[in-house]
Amino acid sequence: MSAAFYKTSDPAVLAAMAAYEAEAKKVSMVGKVFADHFGGKLLTNSTAHGRSVAGICFHPAKDDPLWTKPDAQRANIQYPRASLRKSTKGQRAALSELQAEWRARFPTEKADLAPVLASMGTDWGGLLFGGFAMFQHDGGTVYVSTGVKLAPCMVEIVASEYIAAKAEFEKAKVAA
Image 1: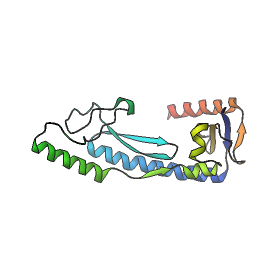
Image 2: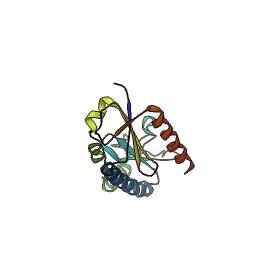
Image 3: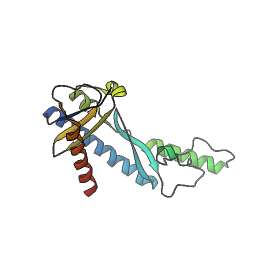
Image 4: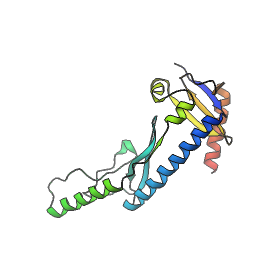
């Protein structure tokens, strides 16, 4: 399946995008408070379902027996260990306390992408085989690249228009 390129300024899509961006901003704010509490940097997870907090990473990596080693395949994310080998009673108590604090503070907020996808005439299941890339540019135009056929509110455009808009978007993002 080849990729098709779309753009839209449909009010329903823009409203869904605005709601999603507000939710994503809230996830980032709550996640930053969480990461700051532990002295790390926030890592978020963006999927076909939306955005959520993945965990935190430390710079430099936290070399502490209570924390896992950095996972290089996941942006050096670190978690409290599940258990300790050859540990003292004090270390086990400290780990138990850290795990309880982690669970109590870990943000559960999620930014749901489903309303945005529904406004475009698809859902996450359609994206599994068609791929999906989206950005908003020019103060209200949403551009999409996907192999899935979208709703009539999404106007199909030529690749050169999409690529030019994407280049402008990236340039504006770097300048900001």
